[in-house]
Length: 545
Image (cartoon, rainbow, N blue to C red; front, side, top):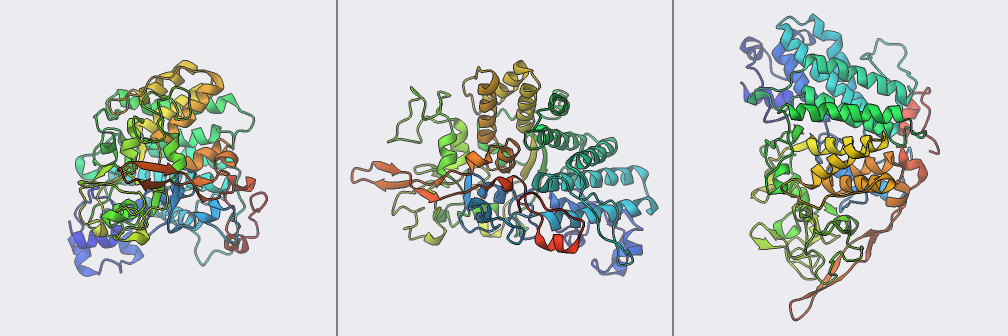
């Protein structure tokens, strides 16, 4: 493989994805970025490179090349804060989103990738070559287009369904919005097509491409969202049953040996190891690609990180005690003078807190400490909440400014278990809901007490388990919207911790407000950007924008 050609064509995508050796005659004749349309669509190796580049639209950490960032979603939810407001999260935090003044907007990016997919579908049949290879690429592009439309639906609801690539010769570019249900059926059809064309797994050189399991995982999330209160206000049970069936299809693949909950003792390794058995699809990178700098963005300032995306005190308080009780519950064992003792093991794997071990030292968030705003080390980058992400932070990375190598997990089996638990409960199967909720809690690295509840109490426990298990993975922002509880969760002050070290070495803790937050009811959906409304007179804006 010509590695230079690979980087030019694919943008450095996915170290785990193989790329068949290029046709040397073609590559010797032309510079890699000057292929004519005729040449581009005459060689399957070049077409595969084209497909590889479309994977950039899948969700991952902050990246200069795209807005498809899950880190930004964390900063715009109650679980976290973006110190530098990189992705205009404050517009959501402060209730300031308008069509002229947007944040976390993916309209342009998603439709640009949809157009690339449509170009592919218009031309792939004319490309000569191995039919099995073409079919696989077709399946990958169906999956990617399905993701783009799903992402648009999450943000805007029903959107225009565009299935052709417009050119300057087209006289009419104006397309009206389709309904949410029409979009749902369209995405389900793309996923059905993709499932038929994709394999269950690849050899090691091609790991990272979409598989049948990835298709089913996206279908599970899609149908869960479609069944939720935001899009199913009448609580149509059939929608919940379909969501449960979709999640069960992924779980059944696990029973066949494709995926298992990671049962190692160290929970944080799920997010650091390339090949956790729990991962269904991940966005793979390597440390040679400078834009992949997640460690730089989440490390504490005392370790020369930016502390850009950090946990809130609200998130810290959500972690249970090891006893399984919330910190506010009677008999929980919570000690306000030692607030980080005896918590859910996932707390220690997800949060860097005052006194936590990290990179061979003890993290110091107390006033005047190494990781505080008064630090002698990069104090402008100190966490403003008094915490940093532990989840995804690779403490073995000693050149964080040069890049990071951990994959970003897009779908993992734990999410599917929680999807199944929620959908099963809503469909009337409390036994299945409890079983799969407790499978998450009983894994080797967690071992939290089993829960026993029913009805609304069980639903609240499932909601809470998602908040803990999936924190910082891009779920919370959309979960509270689909549940229609953002008007509660995102209307509370975002809290931080203020820690004072006493002469005897003990600490005292206070919890002031870092940011007063406001959620407007129209913010359950994004506004369509004004510039898009200006281009297309057939578009109808979302309500109350």
